[in-house]
Image: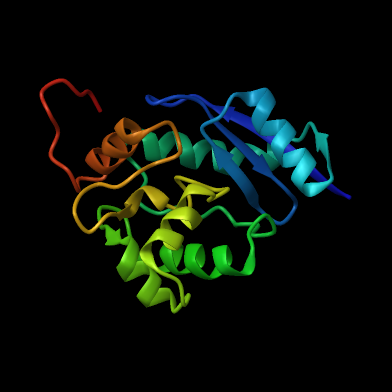
Length: 174
């Protein structure tokens, strides 16, 4: 059994619930806190622990990212909630698509050598257990922005605007 510390990080686009094992961040999701905790505990067969020291770096880095002050996360990643396909694709994304850049679903499939089509890459992005830190919002469709399972397409648009990939609109505040 693994123990997990949780931290809720308020952001401009909703609260991010981060879960951290001794190995690193295992989940970071725009989810209701109770549901997010339950999902992580169930999928890891884990016990929650009160360990603010374990979550301090992810709290600081997420806050800095959403304030526009952080361009690259340094928190360790715990990939244990990913399948081999997810690990290959998400690991390629994490290592190769920096802040402010995007890649298409099809191109990510090719670069990762995952052997699956763009639709399957979209499914991998939709099940990413560590969004924001593993930046699935940077993966776009060949003909537009594509989807985002975090909190919807407007959140994806906001994140891409924060990173400077999209121009701000008159009705948005960063």
